Image (cartoon, rainbow, N blue to C red; front, side, top):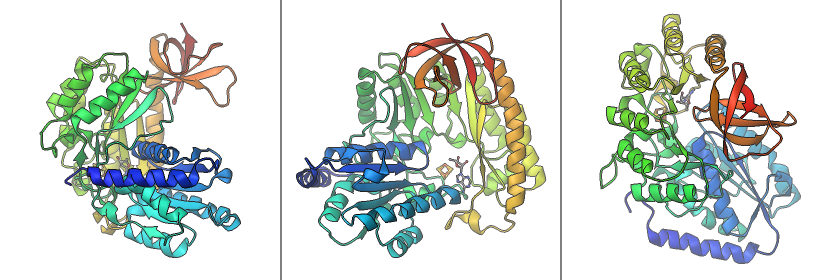
Length: 465
Ligand code: 5AD
Ligand code: SF4
């Protein structure tokens, strides 16, 4: 079987789909999926919804009318797990009212043994749980639940594989996620991902390219290539390849569309990859390069395998002859042993690089990861203090950069009407900057040019031209 789910297993699941359909179709049964966490989870949920729809369920956004309720969970920080459990908790009364309702929990949180046990013993109304690697077996789990089989708590996700042919029900008709690889080999000492998503597995290049071609033919304009560490794409394939080769092949596809990569690891950012990104107008607009910390000592304790010098050299290469590229990063504050001096070093890098925006996180100990049992954990109040300082420093930088766009014309992809502002549309540039503009026509899903007239920390404002 290797890294790929074999045809026999996929055929078996297809039979379950047909069998569930016989039980469900024509009854108007509805399915609700709640998604927490990263883009990878968003992409997984689209596959879950695609499968549920294939089985005859109608997808609903109203949990109160659902006959099957699923929570796709995240485990990256404690807060995400608490939210997941509170949502599962909220579903209890639906089952109390109607015992035929099916409740499933999936994703990263449910791939951990201690959480699986908790769901099994403290949440008696949950019918099944499974991790990210068993997503293709959803038809089997639903079929068994419909037939009142025993509750099921999957542990197969410890050896996950890639299942091709599970079609997503995409939330958007112009922005799409395309997973190019799954899992992670890096074991950064703070991170739970390698434990819950398994080792790196790359999809075959031909499968990725055909998915992208299909999306472009359908009119998709913005495609994000997903993986925990897209820079190491292809290393595990029988026919060895790499991210630069993939990007170069994508460049040959005709059509007007943008490509983003999410997310990268500085230790694997090769010159070849940087060149591939810079050489295509589809990819040269934005790059996300997680820094995590500006202190070499902390980076070592995080097991990141790069130092500040190496990191800054990548930034320099990305910007050389490509000054317009927007840069974003991830920062963790309050990692064990992080001194005031270490924290100051992070602030210095933020001021030096001047990212367009940053994703900052308060370190959250994850059960089973090395950092959780390190000495010198930082008190919560101190973590929050550093977090607030970091946000303040970055907010000033973001505002300053955004203000430099005033007077320029930006190409944007229109996302539709702004939620709270009548007549205002929201859109994003290739560099992921949010642009609001007033407009009488609905140009959702198309590229437009906007003249920027105003800016603040979080967005640009302008007039469509
Ligand atoms: N605590 C806080 N932030 C974390 N991240 C990963 N694990 C943790 C943790 N235990 C952050 C990293 C990563 C981003 C997706 O989440 O910055 O890049
Ligand atoms: Fe987690 Fe590090 Fe892997 Fe990213 S590279 S998913 S931070 S272990």
